[in-house]
Length: 312
Length: 301
Image 1 (cartoon, rainbow over the protein chains, first blue to last red):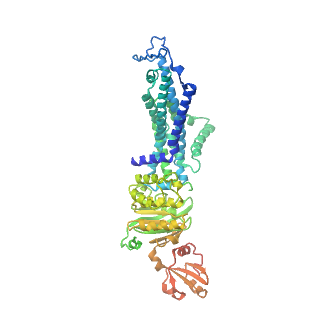
Image 2 (cartoon, each protein chain N blue to C red; image 1 turned 120 degrees about the vertical axis):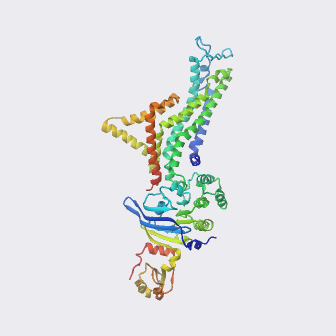
Image 3 (tube, one colour; image 1 turned 135 degrees about the vertical axis):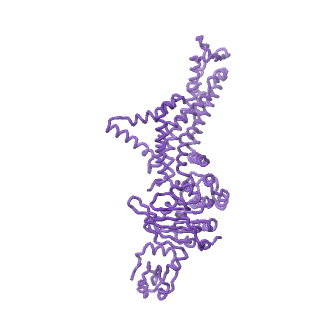
């Protein structure tokens, strides 16, 4: 366990720019964009004065309503039936939060992609692998630590950065409402469910991670196998397989299968902003994915032990 | 300072490295050809050979870094199957330029401290304090000599039983090379440690070695203790008139000098050479050339 923490720490130090500097720069940029929007456009994304200002709904069944026009906001949510107005406000705030989060997660996706493709290639290229190999750390530990960093640690880092900005967004929204002479604790606060939002985003790291596990293992295998370009090693066999299947059999089973099992569900999970995926529906896929991952990691560790030199 | 001869005279040497039938092929190319090798505790073994002779492959096999045919036991362990355990007792420096360039000196110390149970952090810091290397410097900011100093400081702070050095001074100037070997002998080596070293600069390690191994085309062409060189090898410089007589005694090497020729003989009675002139023990460098290039006059009759 101690070795794993050291190995993870090593990855963060090696990839300082991608793991630390980039999220910080993004935080600064997104903050600047929010301030710009607030100052010059009077809105933050979908969140604007017009959309949070509502008069009392005519709908008598609406038990959650806000009225700003007399400076006395009334909030009644005793009845758990959510009005469409409540829903809209909730949605507007959620959209803002998820827009911020998406920016970070899309960036994290590319960081993880390039990290996994390069991490078992770069140390072979500059021969520093011989230094790492002179230490009593097994390749299994090294490879699994890197997989953990790619699948969990990097997304978690970007999620933490995203959370800080989402928090800032929430505070900015409350300040914004306050500046418009509305009570932010009634206009904004009831619609902010940050624990739920953050818990969902946290859960998505693991859900998506589970789905892309075999693809991540494949990227690591390509990284350990490549002598020049890990990217080509990762892409060419898959493209070749698709083309061969298309040319010989005229079918697309492979790409459909990969897409359905290992890509679409994870994207769906992200898009639906929900971790409430019934894994039991995909149990066979998950188990098969774990088997493939195990197989690919075994190859990767073998390559690291026996074919690590680029010259030979 | 520890005298290397103390360990060389141990009555019953403990064998730490035992290789039998070591063979390695890259495709059809035979890199190591059925090598048998034993290395005892407390020795400094020089593994000398020209480029492509197979010396690095031998070291890699001993360290479990390459596959091979044959049997190897290092400290009683299988270097391939038990590499991680083995590396708690065996250190190696593959060459001078392999420390990761992005790493800071302090991070290198911290990393080794955390993953290596035999590492003494204070000792490494103490060694580094005698150099101009700063803890906050990145490896990329260090000169090649400083990187070697750092690497040696890391390795010397590890209480290992075997130290393997593959061309450790390659590309370094003479000052760093002298300093490197001085530190190695004075600060690191003792009767409980074994050093295996490969280098091209044979003359620089000659005084350091207790054992000498020459490897050529994947085969060991010499494997003996340094003390045995005196009784097994003789070098004689003769005048032109005695050249034929010298050749008749089947030298392993002949080279011309100003006003005469120099012959090297192996396993010959010293008395037979008396008529040719005074004999001496050849230098390791001359012996190396003699063994690597036997065609230069060797075997003339």
